[in-house]
Length: 334
Image (cartoon, rainbow, N blue to C red; front, top):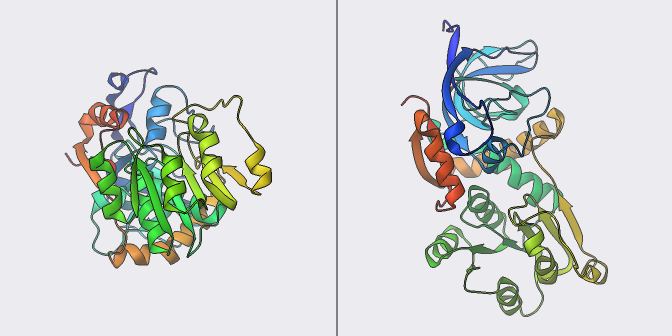
């Protein structure tokens, strides 16, 4: 296809509230060796986008400053050395930035073909959450069949993905959420018990549900506010995996003795600064072990809202309200 000289994208002229984002026109991104250029049909909205908009999550120096970390669309150009994709392929990808735009350049090693039967919206709801959950829950925390996991924020994009993947790989899942409706949604996805953190003490519930043993893994996005309780609910040789700090990153006067007494491991990571090789390794695992589950319908993205590209501010307001269950996706053909 003949590429235009200009594209629409979401500009961020200053940090602040959702209203600071404006649609603008600018040149298409260049395509470096090892990259593919994707004509974006849909883009996922994620918490890191909100953090970047607020000035709290700067992009790596070699990444696009444009918001957006996951896309789905059609390959329209390829950089030197790319052989795994061809022009016209439908792909979804974990972007290092630049996803809120009509065209986005991404490393080929961070892209996958759409699962069979998927459209752009469903494909755009995959990469950020699936890469994150796979890396933290399975690669780093080592969750395996027969173990148990507590997923905080069970109805977030990360949470709905973690519940399904953990259940699909034979783990027993518990999840926290902020209402009865959200707890029921967690249970429909495969959690054996949804815990309403607004009216229940999740530590007491986990101890009761597990006969005092605790869980093998906690996947946490709250941070400091839950740190001590998370340690208390872990079983011996358990692992706390921290992926965000929605409840703060400074924990004071915390009893650390459970780490030694129960031989606990505490891990944490962010996806964006990982190397291209690390992201390719995650991509390869997903391609071999998770994409078949998507194609068989055993796992699926939970999509709460699909909004036109021009309503990006409303998408961010919805994300910040935490009123959603699952993913928020922008359509660029609207």
